[in-house]
Image (tube, rainbow, N blue to C red):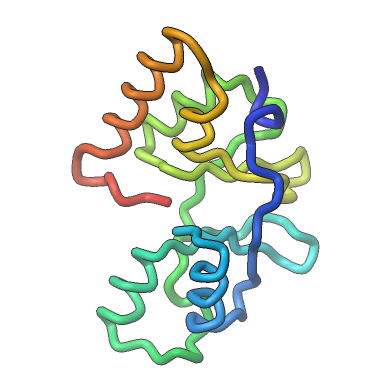
Length: 147
């Protein structure tokens, strides 16, 4: 199974000049905790999480009109749409990522794979063992707050 087989394709994104308030509204409307940040060519530039808004924006006294470029995570981990699910899981575990962007060969955003996608779409003993193991890995340790 490949990343493209499991990813959520209908992903809202915004650009670096989107305001914090507008991005937060998008997250609220879609009931998501993260938004990919893309350029005009739809290439992945960063990620913005609800935690970024809370800790980096509110915590630092940023205004609602501040562009997301000032608070987004720029150190990115992502996979190609042809990446095997085992590698997706490995990246999520290693870097403690709950939502992993999926891109094509030109780094254009194609989708996102979340822990929930793994739990929803995979079946059998592999699912029970590996999803639980991945969830534990991304939820423990000092870096457990990424995407």
